[in-house]
Amino acid sequence: MPQSTMKSWFNMLLIMVLLSATTLAAAQGTIKPNETDETNETLEAPNPAGMMLVDAFLLRPLGLAATVLGTAAFIATLPFSLPTRSADDAAKALVVKPAKYTFARPLGQVEP
Image (cartoon, rainbow, N blue to C red; front, side, top):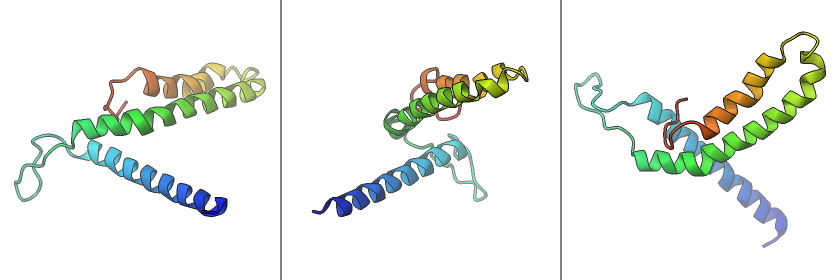
């Protein structure tokens, strides 16, 4: 298989995985156990094991990448944030928040 075909196949697979994980994460936040809809039928909560897998293999690596990129952006913007005394706000938004999302929440809990 030529390398360009393999690369485009891999890119398509990556896009499909990201879209699937995003859909699962969005569904996890919208349905709560024992919640009823308009027809008074009880809705089931999403599978917690599935959410843990999505979290462990997709959201945590993305959170780690966001933490690394946020740290790089924070360092790059220090010359602009130090004179305006907004370095603390920038650190919280670019470094601390992604790091807490990645390392300080229970596995499978998508909402911070």
